[in-house]
Image (tube, rainbow, N blue to C red; front, side, top):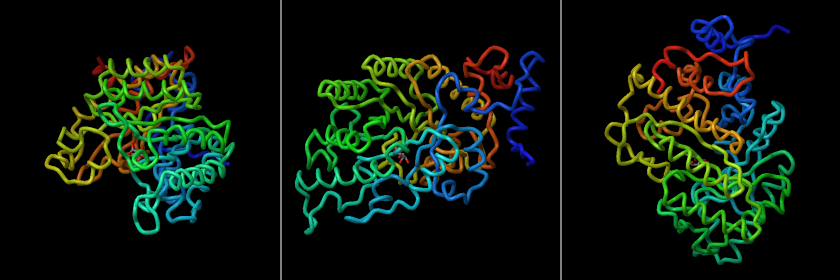
Length: 390
Ligand code: GLA
């Protein structure tokens, strides 16, 4: 059978060759998953068009570059369990089949979250708040049904998503209001009951900020002390060009590793749009409003910003690689810039490693350049990028 080499791999190869001495020439076109095979898995969040094969360009990037997948939306409560007693696994089944047929580490995302969960979950027949017992029974049914369906096939679950406020206290979500603080313990117990071998994660954003990090550390300590099976903390890492600092990131990963949990970078992207009131955090409720400055780069990303983005990715991966003993996976939240949630509300954003045409950006080469590789097989980063790196 004839092997078709995607155009972007040829370009990456050409970029490497143009800047490498003969001894540095990579033996084969380097991909993210190959470059990082000694460090951690490199994953990507995939959307419906990719799951169903409508976006073939995206599919070919996913297959060639990544060895783990996360479902951008198809496993959220509103997607799999839209009505009481009604489950729809059409897209989720295809997602898991895609991962299996490509030998990928498959992530389940997410079981308990305050967002993308239908209102009926928290209500009784009259539309009044459900009781603790009713909500706990719904939670158990949901988790046993969803996790149980993919037992032994989905290797890791983001069990609880975003339970903390910025000041480190527990978010007063409907889960907490109705069940109480122990909804978190219960969710982990139900997930463990459904698939005792699956790795279970607590996932959140902005954990690099000290007050929130302290809250997360207290939460993980509490769960561990109670014997709750929590294996991993997911740092979403919806980052900016200047946040978090490498120091904050370094400290955060070390702090969690000390607690005896692994760390995963679960939703990495870099928002390049200049700061506005509405894009300071990854708080999803703040992302629907159109704001001034959001379309600053509607005509394209200036070259200087492109390089700044590449340097930023290099800086982030440098920290991740330093912590490769504690980090098991780094997942990008989307394949190309066109796929990113950060384009919402009039923004034209450039947060990922592949551009809108599916071509690798300088940031892609900058990321490759940070990997630990066996001697003689290390990719040589594009000199135009490496020259500008700190
Ligand atoms: C959070 C969720 C993700 C995704 C992003 C934004 O980070 O965990 O599933 O919804 O928000 O889209």
